[in-house]
Image (cartoon, rainbow, N blue to C red; front, side, top):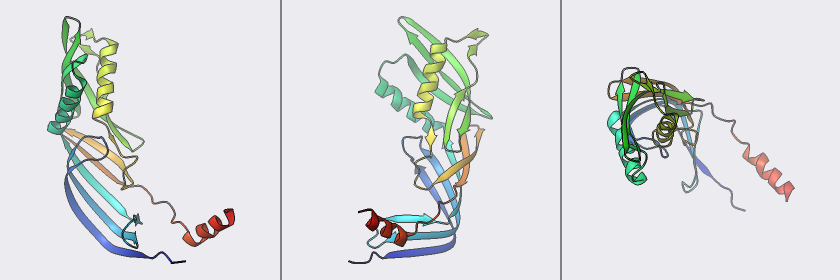
Length: 204
């Protein structure tokens, strides 16, 4: 039986700047700065599998208002003539304003909502509506639910399945952009390959 070999690459530190980064179905990240210490990369023979160990990773990313609105435009095109139309976001200091039209039959109601970015379990970034009134008039609950559903489906960033194994620490609203920061999650204990192989033989 041939013995599987692997190759290792180690480095003290590294810094890389990535642009137009897409993670899953989330919004496009305009720029992502990644810094890492104690890098230990192991690749199987032939380069089929690649794994990271003991990496102390930190990152900071920027998501622009332009890219969020581009995603909303594409989503509304695929939705056709939906109930919520002309949906747009404007990122201000500390909050995000959402504008659009609620269309029902012959009625078209313009609306504006405030939202804030929230981080859930360190793994998901999403927008949560904080106002349900316009000019002292309560907006229909169905409108708020529809808007929140669209925001959750199209503007959420989910890092649970990210290959880098990272967690979100903070998000900051400033005019025209969201700035996110995060770090690597603790690495699981390395597997004892010889013991696992022995156990597999005993189980047969």
